[in-house]
Picture 1 (tube, rainbow, N blue to C red):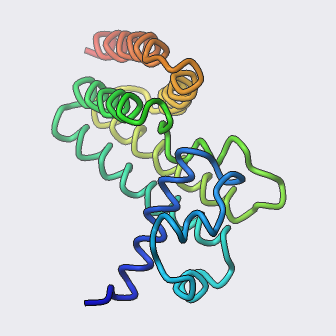
Picture 2: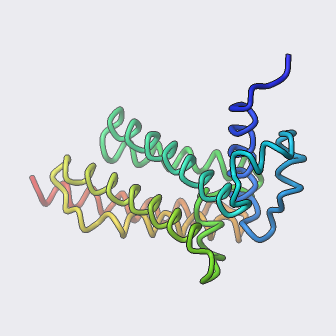
Picture 3: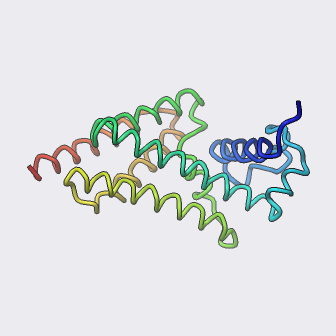
Length: 191
């Protein structure tokens, strides 16, 4: 039985998202995406007529939505501080299991954007904006100031990058300890 065309599209997007997360945009080539995904070459241009940048942007949007759902569900199930710890544990496992090749699925692309890559810039912007708004909503729901949202997101992003560079979980542990202490202090202050 041959795969449906939608399977090929999904394979292309999933493969692209993983390769972007591991090696960034510039190092990810269309031939590598096709070979790794085992999708027919014709399907690449059928679903993504604008080429690599369109494919990458769509993959970023998709993985961004997946993480938005993961974050929302985790915070809902475990509360703010417990949920934050569970999200950190997710990233710890991701880093270790990938030998520190996978951190944030968006940051690897965002860190190397070129001025002419407006489609990718917009995709990264939208994903980060959605994540920040989700965090702000969780803070608001727990009576904490929303303005902490960019601090939490940027601290986590920076810690993930440092973990990859140092091949160590220490930056994530240090950062998460400080952020959890901040959240607990804000929570106690707002009682």
